[in-house]
Image 1 (cartoon, rainbow, N blue to C red):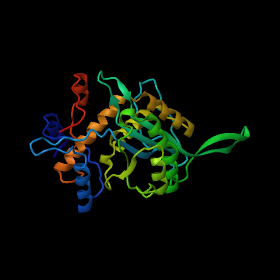
Image 2: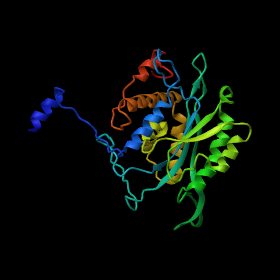
Image 3: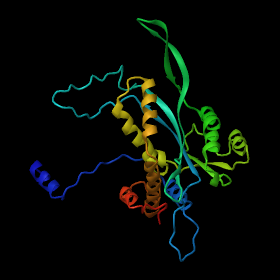
Image 4: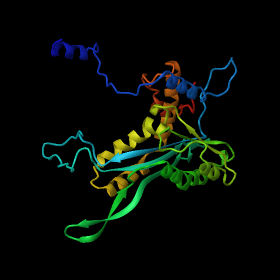
Length: 308
């Protein structure tokens, strides 16, 4: 077709623009595991009732995320009097980055709609510490943040026991204190096993019942952190254009403090919508995330806690 024909068809909505995302290939076993995971998120009901999703107030999603200092290519808008910034690094494939660990639960509200628990348990830096670097003009003695060279199973266990479990026991609402709490992570090789002895010993301390569970393989759409939380924080974070690792930490923490708990609650509803689509498509990852008009429902005080 000529460009004019394409442009006319686009304006008349006969042609549409689609962003095609490359997704992981799933086996039959993967599809089955995804459907089984989704069915476990349904409330028990009789044959006469419509199936309803669990509110998932007892689930903590945990994952790590690399935050890069900048993107290779970034779109910007300037007035005719402004100059584009001079962005540079030693090598495009070695952009400075640092990893953050995040553990999130669903926010909770009282009968009047006031937030009594914002769901943010842990959002911390994974690092080895600080190292001395040599400044040409100043000499030895300047401190520089040093990111962790690698994150293995031992480091994952250390951060779970040292940061995640104490945060859950300190911040968890009293109303759910004696219920079973599930910590969900993906099945990366660096993550601990659900029956890890040290983890189970620490979870039982104080009479708590905390269990580890895996999400299905190749299922980024079943973790609320990958579903919307990390992308939202990263989009806000890149607007500040940090220049050092210390500035990355500062800017990420600034945007974390600014992030409203209402947005986090919406991601949990998106998670339920994705589960519903996965059941419809028999475990497939090729589906369109439905628009629930959550902001509109929120303004009308009609936002549901769970979907049918």
